Length: 224
Image (tube, rainbow, N blue to C red; front, side, top):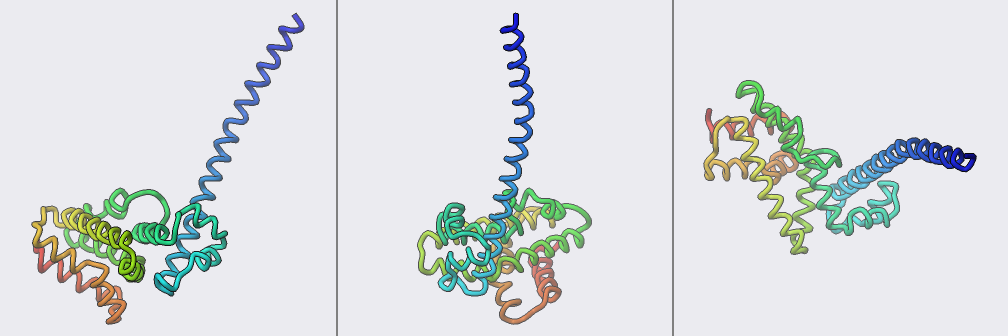
């Protein structure tokens, strides 16, 4: 009887211990995931700053690690190489954070379908400009890198095609009608990182002036 009682007691204690450890393990796992995401964002933000400041050739992994406050090994284990880090930085810059949620699944994209035409177009231009402010200088760094690396040049083609698809999705939500390929190609070109760079980074247009020109282009090429 004593042996049976001891066995029951042991089983009960083991069960209690497991039920206590379960939530602790989950909490610990959540902390590690949150810390990993924060570290990733630190690295991506530091890399974005340095790629903008120094370009592709002038930016080293060591400099990124120093600015992010992490070890060089952390960057290589997280991204694999400098060029894969550049790829991640561009994805990060488009949406503005390291969360693995595509732009088209975010609330900002959903706003393009609400309100009247003027409100939808304004929302689209605000989203576009926010993205351009984060991406345009980095895009120039990517073009520098693509000129000497065939793999990065292949990514450049993928990025451009992805932007064309997103341009179609955005404008068709705003205009509430389909775009033909000619109209899409023209707007895709006008709304590009390159044109933003020429107008804002080179000519010095401010946010409002750029928005006005893009509104004029969209309404002229795709009238309601």
